[in-house]
Length: 407
Figure (cartoon, rainbow, N blue to C red):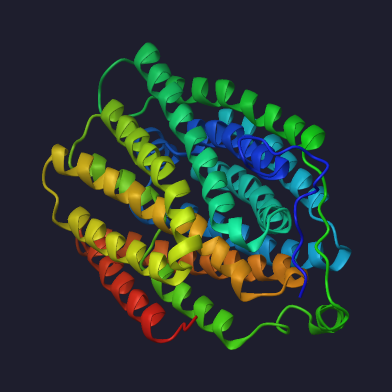
């Protein structure tokens, strides 16, 4: 099987393939926008619209599941047509068009509709974009490249949250609840970097075509969505589903901070800390996985997650929440890029789009029952209950990775 390398005629930027670098810039700009507009949606739903926690879980879970369905289809379609960039452009464009409508949202149904539009765009773009990154690099730099992309993406989140904190301070000052006027200013300002991201993608990112052997090409043509994958990939998806069942929407982490009566401005700065630790660890952990192996690094990340979620269940003061947000960012930095690189390790190049679609699809579809379950446990038991469940299932998944998914 011949791996595709980045076009040698294009100069590397900061040691990375141009595609990897500019897709990182696209994600940075997009995340500035998304963090400003969507990260505080659970507080918008609770503080401004006054909906129940179960509805918050429904909005978070359903939007992720719609995202997942389109990731599956778009990943398969990108393999079918042999092109990644058009779907990436379409997806980023759909999300950008959806975001301004949050300014007009006046009930939870409208919020859900806009969120679904945004996640539809993310579903269309994500699998093809990840496949394009994998197509643009050699196997020896795969973990490092995905780590760089995750770091850029999360650096955008840091910048977006810092801007959001500044807007909150200027518009409403203190207090622990979000105001409508404040949120509308976040939407107006947040749309700008999303538009810039689409232009960067159109101008600077180029198509890369992975080379395939004749046998692999015949397999990919006739296999469809399910065929062409070995047992390890299937087992990895099962283990991911177990982990994700306890990894409900991050809406609940934000609600947990507010449940302990952390002021709004501190919640936003905690999210800055979360994304800063995520960005700081993503690249070195991706590089470590190139040397140590993806499987071991993922097990480490899930173990950290279990400890952090146990901490969220037991937390009772603001300083503990600060530490837990930092630990949560470390978990993301350890696992997110490495898991995507691991998918590329397990499949042939010409099936990458389909593989990423299935991977993201399993995660996204499992998030709906996970978020509904978390919201129900929060309402009928306690705010700590969803976090106890998440910690337990993370340990089960780590054991599954250790004993079932052999490298």
